Amino acid sequence: MASRRVLHFVFKVGNRFQTARFFRDVLGMQVLRHEEFEEGCKAACNGPYDGKWSKTMVGFGPEDDHFVAELTYNYGIGDYKLGNDFMGITLASSQAVSNARKLQWPLSEVTEGVFETEAPGGYKFYLQDRSLPHSDPVLKVTLAVSDLQKSLNYWSNLLGMKIYEQDEEKQRALLGYADNQCKLELQGIKSAVDHATAFGRIAFSCPKKELPDLENLMKRENQSILTPLVSLDTPGKATVQVVILADPDGHEICFVGDEAFRDLSKMDPKGSKLLDDAMAADKSDEWFATRNKPKASG
Image (cartoon, rainbow, N blue to C red; front, side, top):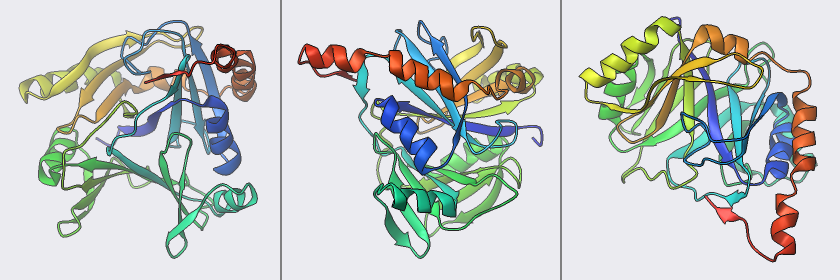
């Protein structure tokens, strides 16, 4: 499994302007690429919506060796209901802590040197007030699970992730595909996992030839396959193959063929301008305001 990589987490965003401000100005990430689509994704990358949408990849460096965020914006939808499924992303960046203070973005110290903050939409981020000069600042993504052992069987035995830490008492485990990659933390909760409408998706890559085997494994194990192997097109860019799975708690998981994804995910120096231009051209807020109507909820 050494050839597998953790890539990104998908967030649905209702307010693209404020979200861009948080990721760029508070966290200090850069826009790596921005893409606009006229109709919904065949693998429901933008959720269960079939209208116009956009995808913005933001991170601390190239997607080849950084865990990044995918911000999906569905035109005409202003907010999404949060569940208890996504518990936060932890990153190490003194600069982000400093930026948040400077911009008066709400911060609360949860333990010494660790600050909790929220992206627009209520998504939690934990900022460690320290810096990692030669590695990706994004340390882990934390997801809620209802049965830790069942989840460990899925993520470790079926998906091949290494268990780095396990604490039965605290009902948590830390997993990953490599020492130098962002980790997945599973945190047991004493209730069912509710994804509501804001539910995200975590993405990994593997060699393209492994995708049919992965799909067949999940079929044999009677596990959920949300989207069987399918090709996804991006205008003017590489076509990628993906399989979308769901773990025992319904967390969505994308596996994409690594070779084409490396081509698709090349950093676009025009990415930030494309996002800014798209936000400037998006008159949906004004349209709803002049008609005294709220935007739809997801």
